[in-house]
Length: 259
Image (tube, rainbow, N blue to C red; front, side, top):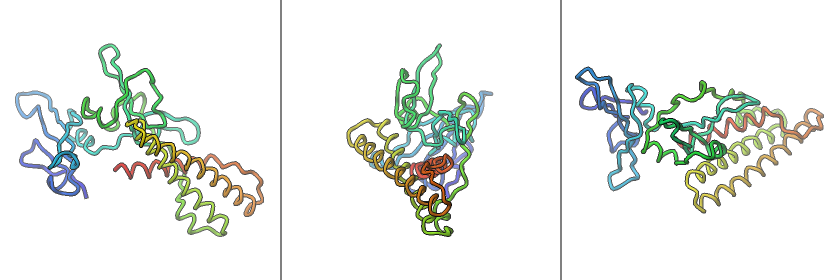
């Protein structure tokens, strides 16, 4: 279990173990404020085991609070676009890029997933990781309004399939779960392609988009069978709450993969 431990003196904390530990992620260190009456300042460094022969520490944020600086190490950065409609709130998918500009001497920026990467089109674009290494970034940093997570439909596709009373109901829940996984793959590769627009990523993005479209069409068809066979309804349209549940499950899959 990852945990912060004090290292050496009260001005440094490491995220578990040591540099050779599997869960070691980085550290925060007080760079100002130990003495002299200055306000505290903490810098956060993330450890990347895949860089160089022995790995590399990369600065990714600074903050006046140690606790806040710690959230930046292997932090979760979500898209900041606000959604309306069913389950309003901010987009639940992980951020892939940062759009940024300078306005009246201040840096403005917004974190975006691949799907919403067209927002603020005239602003500069930088992959999320590169922006963190260059300018620093704190998870859940102030945005316009308060971050509101979409309220998910309480639906567990796997459990629902196990508890299904008919074969058609079971097949419907399985189709919903497959659609959620297909959407997760699509949104993951969309974000990866936007951050790193090279042909291999573009190919994966196109392929997973097609797979998601087919999975959604299949889920709609299986739901229509369920509605007709089990409830005598002729409507083939997939209810909004099913689409919302698929989206929430897909976001959960992508976020767990990134962690």
